[in-house]
Image (cartoon, rainbow, N blue to C red):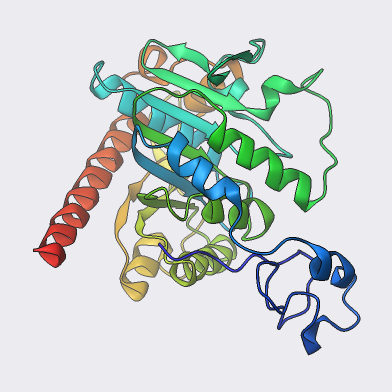
Length: 326
């Protein structure tokens, strides 16, 4: 994957990037509030990139969970995917990295809100949810779950670098990275640090209505411009399942055909739809294991099909990779 050009969040349109020899000197830099910082900062590749590559050598699959739109249930989908992968094979080791710096929710959703992170000579130890499922989040480092994180871009950047390079994950089959909405600081930091670490790809989450799909299309464009392999799109909250009668109804009308039509138009894989089940929402709030509490939920069955789709997409990518090599 090609390295992204890192730009300050307040940079002008034609910013050459902080690593360029022209940083702070180009005509586009005139009047930029970051001009002095960029012109005096050391140039060249961030040493954190090599550190992340070395740290994640024992991680087979590194997957970003993205969505340009907030409120589509991306954190819940990340937790569901991690639970499904962990339940599918007890010999496989799964981990979740919560890089939604200002809105960390994985500690609550995975039921480890009161746990603390410990540091050893080999780095931070992640918090274990189950024998083969672990998680790391800035939520473990806060004094209180209600504490606000009021950070500018550079501090977020440093925190993500630490998470990617200083957590002792051990040997992992899957590392799922839960990201915030948008295509800005946290996303640029993550793809920059993962640029030499063989990022497997991204799973993109949306809901059916056009107001969500508008932002999700921007996320897809971001992935393409950043050379991120799109494993597929998951349509969340596709229908509502009544907990009493089990009948389904549409809350978010797919006025333009929903995620499936968008995937057809943009020629990207559609991994499947997840219904909205209040029982799953209750499990998320209480930090309970969906697969143990509501194994008969249609959401559980649907997420298993999504996991199968990710496996198929990965297999095709591996076959294509070897075909190109040989």
